[in-house]
Length: 179
Image (cartoon, rainbow, N blue to C red; front, side, top):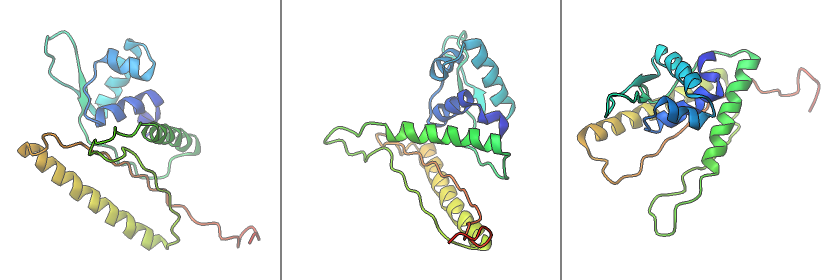
């Protein structure tokens, strides 16, 4: 997780996961780095299997594309790493919510909405909910991949869902004496 917690790497991954293909120069402009620094970051992401080079039209450019559709991180990060990833997630959410709505008459719905819920449940219920949501996401991914392979997506907008699970023990006040 530490390798993708760097804000520049995370920003470029988000763009590549959206279907873009970027050269080191394009990615550097997006992330605010020099092309040589971004080349280093792209090579690190490639070593992790998250990005790969794609064919170049002229043989000189070296474009990069995502080699995965996303990332599934498990385990508990240390506090500084968790904080860095939360900053990356917050920046993603801010960009999505700042996206202007489509013009009147455009059939696409608003590109972003945000939901935050607190659900009281046991550890077993939390694990079961995570498994159910993951299964729904996997089903949607498989359907989308099959549609893309058949070429059935012409003219259809593509949607991306970012799901963030943060299961934490609730402080019910028993240990601190608070109500």
